[in-house]
Amino acid sequence: MTTLLTIIIFIISYCLLMVEKWNRATVALTGGVLLLICNVYEWEEAFGFIDWDTIALLFSMMVLVSITKKTGVFTYVAVRLAQLVNGRPIPLLVVTALFTAVGSAFLDNVTTVLLFVPVLLSLVKQLQLPSFPYLVTAIFSSNIGGAATLIGDPPNIMIGQAVDHFSFLSFLNNMGPVVVVVFGVTLLILVLLFKNKLHYDERLAQRFMKEDANEYLEKSQLLIRSLSVLFLTIAGFMLHPFIHMDITTIAVSGALLLLFTTDHILDVEEVFKEVEWVTLFFFMGLFMLVGGLQTVGLIDELARGMIWISGGDLPFTSMMMLWSAGLISGIVDNIPFVAAMIPVVQELQGYGMMDVDPVWWSLALGACLGGNGTLIGASANVVVAGLAASYKEPIPFIKFAVYGIPMLLLSLGICTVYVLFRYLLPFLS
Image (cartoon, rainbow, N blue to C red):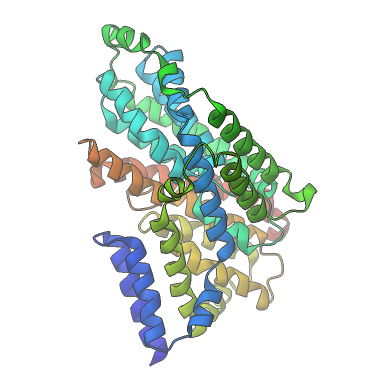
């Protein structure tokens, strides 16, 4: 009976998250508390299921970006890049893709789109360009760029915390090459698809070029300190294997250092108000929901099922994980899916599959790139859709899927070739 109740609560919570009519943190936490009410586990166990390393890492990055944002540096860079291409539509599309992809790799994709999309919407409005091509480009690029690093996309953060020997450089080394290829192919296709729909208005472009980007930039001690600490923190991530310091410790140290050095300039309470608390509590509730599945043994059964279907064959298991993660993440938010799959992959080792690294990389690639399939495939998509709607530029669900699903399938095809040749050739003979 307990197992059935747990499954029902998990499925209902998942469905409510999909329809997005209620706050996702409220839904996830309610599901977790219902498991407590049904005596699936006790409070001590529930807190044990929450991955506090992931929560602390996300919180620290939110604090760093929240303070840096106040200097206007992100808006300044976006406007300057647009002026470098003289406001021309196709180069602006390329700049949008590059800015979003790089930002998503080193700041995380949700934060990047929150910072950049309002600026982007203002730019295209000034140039009287259709917003849809640029919004689609921003979404695709944020998910692709975020896949490249440990901190770029929430699924990567969760996987990085779950596997002790995965570092920031591990993600760059294993995810970076295929991400560059997928990004290049995607950008080329987007340019070809939209080049005849974007028209250059020289009069509007000249007016835009006269705008002074320096007006957005606050040249002060805050700018110097926030950028210094942000770059220092990212450098710490890259040097993580050599300085033998945990990624979370580096992020927390960076956030605290910036808070201390800017304490007399900014009100800490105001900084904390800008932290995305909904996202943090959503993760907590999500970990509790998945913990319920672990408690009743369903995760063990899923792992046994994968071993049974694949016969313990590593290449088959990796391909199954890549495509299931990609296709399912195209339909539902990739974060709940990855939260459910992490303990499954961990259990695979207990059933005789010793080298599961290819399965981990397949899960990361499928989940991150699968998010491009639909508007609800990843958190960054939902954020961009919400921002666009608030600017009276809504993104139609079906119209997005017409572009997203083919891109998803193409990305998974490229990743299939990559995973096979990089990790699985020795196991195919």
